Structures are given as structure tokens and as C-alpha cells.
Image (cartoon, rainbow, N blue to C red):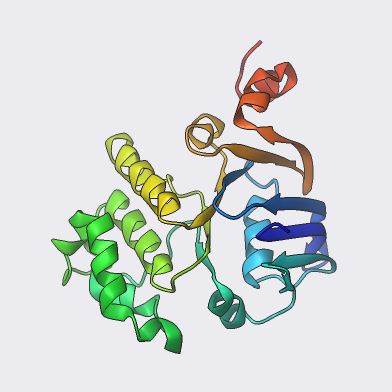
Length: 237
């Protein structure tokens, strides 16, 4: 049994179909990519998993339990957290206050001090700016804060939606190293990314989505060896 199983997922936005038939699986401890161009349906897939978009059809199971159409708070309580595209921080609130917002569920609040300590160990730059408003942070520091906020709920599965947008190249290496540590500590990661090269530096396996459908999947090595994948997504002839 996979940690996350998505089967035949269909999602519509205002009667416009965004996902036609998406199926994927993520094993416990994996780091898996969901790759594709802008508008392919990647963010919608993550939104459906976390409960933002109730599916029109299909099944989503987490640790063997059906979670499709459950409330977002219930899904988070079961062990899934989302780092949304664009970070969506509370810009006028401090770094610490943003982290505390990630621990709003009762079970998480009981461990809030411990988890803030863990986030600061992962991202020392945040500790130096504990009382600074989130809106005053650099793009890279804001992304660190968004990841830290998601970790405050103690997830088993972390959904990352375009985590490197607006992050300086030198800081991307720091964020990538932190993600490596997160996985090493037992958190499974499903990463959405349209920069295929960057994603393949981190994930070990990936699904490629086009126009709301999964069109290709495989290990990083298999995808890189696929001439069609290289020509279409990596610009290789």
C-alpha cells in the first residue's frame, strides 16, 4: 500500500475541466515530482489532495484511508501539508507568528515550541529574523518560512508547489539542502515544478502531466534516458 494513492482524478473549475484522469502513487519516504508546463494541472492536483478542490470523480487515499471530499483541516490533521505557490504568507505578521499559524490544530499546538526550534535549526536565517515582518524578508527567506510553516503541523507528506519561484540561485541550493534533510528525517515529498532540470536534481521519480492528464512516468534515470522526454521537456535534440 502506497502512502498516497490518486486514481482517476477529475477536477473542474467553474465547469472548465482542469484534470481529466490523473493517477499517481507516492511511497512512504519517497521524493516524487509532478512535472509539466504552466497550466498543465499540477497545482490543481495538489489542491485536490489537500482538499481545496473536491473532485468530480476519482479517489484519493492517504495511508489507506479515503480523503477525497474531506475538509482541509481533517486532511492536515491526518498528516498532509501544502506549501502553496507564491508562499501566501501573512506579510504584516512576524516570522514567529507565521510559524505559529502553521500549528493551529490542537495536536500541533501542544508541540509548538519544539517544532519552532526544529524549523530554526533547519533554517537558521529565520531565527535571526524571528520578530521581523514576513513581508520584509527576501524571496528565499519567505520560501523558507513557507516551508517551515507547513512543517509546524508535523506532516508525513509535504506537498511543495513551485518552491523555487522568486528564489535567488544561491539560495536555491540552501533550500534544496533543507529539503534533503526533511526527507532524511522521514517526511515524504511530492514536488510540483515546471523547471524540469531543477526538479530532477531533487526527485528520484516523477510523473509528467499535460493538459490535465499524466502522459509519462518513471525514475529520474529512465526519464533522462527517454529521447522523447528529453526532446520535449529538456530541449535536447
